[in-house]
Image (tube, rainbow, N blue to C red; front, side, top):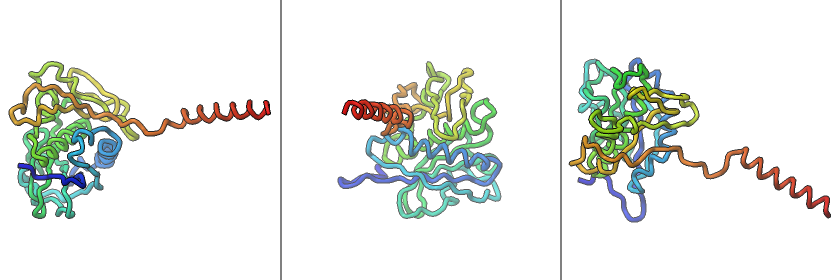
Amino acid sequence: MLLLSSCASSTPTVLVRPIWIDGPAVEDRVEIDEFLDCLVNSSTLPQWWEGEVRIELAASQVIPAPPSTVDWSELADLLPQDRGGTSAFLVFGEQPHLRVGACGRNDVVSVGGRPAALGVVRTRPLCWPTGDRVRTETQIATHELVESVDALLGHAPCAGGGACRGRTVCPDRCDTFVGLQCAGAPETTWTGCDGGAVEGWLTQSFGRQGRDQGACEACIDCDFVPRLRRSRWPRWPAWAAVLGLVAAGGAVWWRRD
């Protein structure tokens, strides 16, 4: 069922809303804010949806930890009420506050009477044996964001599964992990997959075949890789060189005159 559709005159917008359940992992919030800003506003990730939807990033929020363990499927009742638009909630939480089971989960839920995408990122226990909690948070957040928004659009939520999440039975499984470098990113991040590392924050690739329910967990071709978008203008050193040449040419012309 298509839960989010566009009309001929406009493209629907989904507001990405990071939510942290209060706990030790909240200390990662500032860095994850920087990562998500890079992912949403400076990378090619929005091109994944090919104009089906626009994504915008909201400021992150911290909500109180529940008094007892909450299953991830019950999170909708704890989320801030929808702001009147369509939201994609990214919830970061750890055991024992949150029962996730897997490294992450996603679904389409009702918040404030409106359909919303929900992606859940388990911050502890770690998913990959690197000792780096942020490594898990950046990759799983990317994974759950893509699949939950896909589900909101009526696609199967499997574009980041199988080979694209590094499933052991798939060939070249470690190739799915890629780096994203923006201001604030680490120099390198260990993947935890066959001793590999990437430059910057760790993200992953996605496969369009995964939008078919029958391809979930298959070793699909991971044909979309989030990369930094190229700047519209050259960096300052390139402009400096151009201006230098123009100035030099002007000086020659002036002497000839």
